[in-house]
Image 1 (cartoon, rainbow, N blue to C red):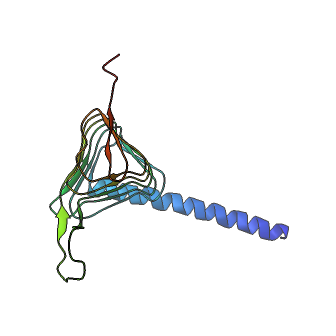
Image 2 (tube, one colour):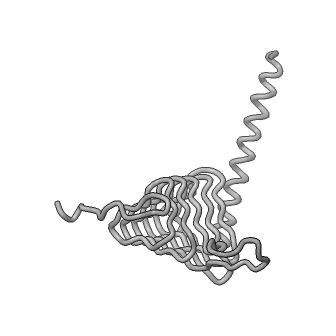
Image 3 (cartoon, rainbow, N blue to C red):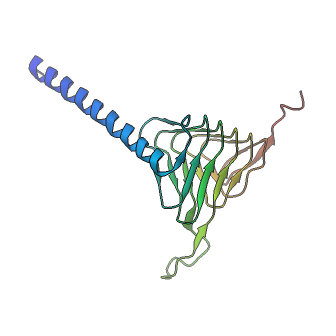
Length: 173
């Protein structure tokens, strides 16, 4: 490649990266205007998506990782407490199809429900949280888990579907 082409490519890449950064900053600013997001809440990385006509409340000193999605169906809400750590590629939905139905039928039953993530929760990478779930205070959801039932406070859950691995022992010391 000629020197001129290298310089042009470098300039083009630089302009693209600056434009992308501006786009992402504006997108996150729009989320803050539309939903209830604490000032200290952080979007860690690119391509976080918040959408839906429901309510999304994101707490103080919490964050969500890149490529994560939160959907709030009309009339439902997603709440994330304070000091929560939500890793990358996490999916949180307040609406889904019921799995135990005849999919050849034109009638589609939905599963709807609020998703509440209490304070001090750590959600690992690639986790899917279904509608109607409460994740208890100070608990952990391990990477690659699918949450189909409520998670107890002070607990560690993981798997598909997520199951109790153990209760936290920090109080035993």
